[in-house]
Each structure stands twice: as C-alpha cells, then as structure tokens.
Image (cartoon, rainbow, N blue to C red):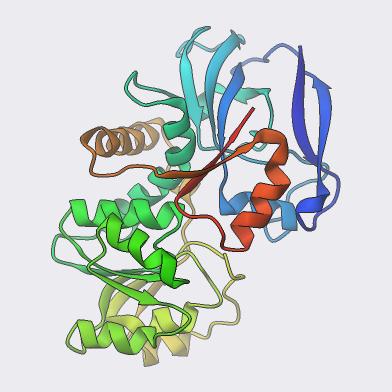
Length: 325
C-alpha cells in the first residue's frame, strides 16, 4: 500500500518538512501496520526537525499517534487486525497516513479513550506521570513550580499535581494564558516575562522555596528554576523550548542550597513492559476519572504540519494540538 509521509532531508525551520508517497511493505517480524487516525504534535518534533536532537537523515517526523492495526507481522501475539492502538514513540514517522511500527511500542486503547484524546495526551500524559510520580516522587503537600503551565504538558502536570494534593505555582508567558493555568488548578500564576519568578516563589513559600521545579523551557528559565528551589530541593529540567541548558558548574548547585538536578527523558522510565503497562494504566485512570484531561485547542490537517510547527515555536498554541490525516 502507499502511505503519505513527512520527510526531512536536512535540518532547519519548518520549511524543511516535505511530503512524499512511500510504498509500505508488509510489516516485518515484531511489527504491525498502523493506519493513523490522529497524530500528536510535541515540542520534541521541532527538536528533531531543527537538529537540536540529531537524527539520521533523511528522517521521518513525529512519534505519537493513535490509529488502527491493519496488518500483523510474524511473532506478534499481543495485537490483532482491527485493534485500536496508540504509541508515544520513540520511533519516528508518525507524520504519515500509515506506517509499520514495532508492536512493543504500542498500547491498546480502552474503549472510553478516543483516538484524538490518545494522540493529544499519551506522550504528554506519560511524561507528566513519570516526572511527578517516579522521577520527582511528589508527595501530598509538596510545593511544585511548573513552568509553561499553559502548554500541553504543563496543563496536564498541573491537573495531575492537584489531584495528588500538591500546591502548584505556575508560570506562563503571557496574560491570556493566566486563565488557562488557573483553569487547570494552579494555586498561583506568575508571568515569566514580567515577574521576578524566584522572588515571588520565595514570597509565596515564606522564604523556603519550591520542593520541586518542573522545567520544560530550558535555557531561559534555568536561573529562575535554581533560585526558586528550596535547600536540597529538586530541579527537573526535561525540555528545551528556549534552548538547552549548557555550561552548568556543580558549584552553582551548592550555592543554590545543595540543590539536586536531573535531566530525564520519558523512554528511560518506560523501558520494560511492566513500566510501560503501569505508566499507561495510571494515565488512562487519571483521564477516566476526569482528574486529568487533554485540552485539544488546535487541530491542523496532517500536511499542514509545518504551519503547526511555526505556531508551536511561536508560543501561539495552548494545551494540545493534533494533526488529522
């Protein structure tokens, strides 16, 4: 069969995304053919496209998608033709109408989770799950600073944190996004471009600082994150929306109060089948209960992915975005 797919021959801006027709072979051993019904847009897609996260070229784009199994290769026992499935990655190529996918990267979708919800929330929701529950191990009553709280991961993280009893201080980039962070449940919302974030966090916490900082922004917020963290607190730097954090001296951590820092990635926490099953089950449970939801505030046609990338990088999107074939 023929699939329509995005390809990049070189790294750069959104203009490097091209669309080609590919003759898709039958799925190989351990693979299934997945017809995509909804594709998730994530910041990591822009990192692959720009070269911030190098990938072998030419390359496909996108890791997250929901769809239907149309064919099954040898050695695949957990899935059958007709199954509704979703994947957060890590394999690239989700920007396509169909592709062959390693079965071990797929999750079966419960009947009460829609394809669009899965595509909008699986990567972001699993990211929130591992950051909060297994990386930072946030406890009820903890104070957590969440940067970019109006974004896809940010809104899910705020809702998750409130569901487990944490106090949330959120930052957003503009006044219109304040209501989004408050709507997600943030106790305090700061404007990252106007407020002295660290000073305000200290004021809110009586001079102590945040127990945990969740920072998906990177270079632009690093100093504020460090200065906002309490003595022996934890900064979780998990993204590079403003560029990577570089040239950090260990002495900075000592001067900040013996602060701990980690730079985790999702797929180091979703390695074994048990880890993957437990993490996705926790997410689906949160979605089912209504404690967490994926607000899909933008929908683009699949072949308008370049326009979607421009909007995402310009800070013009809120919540989650899906691409529709």
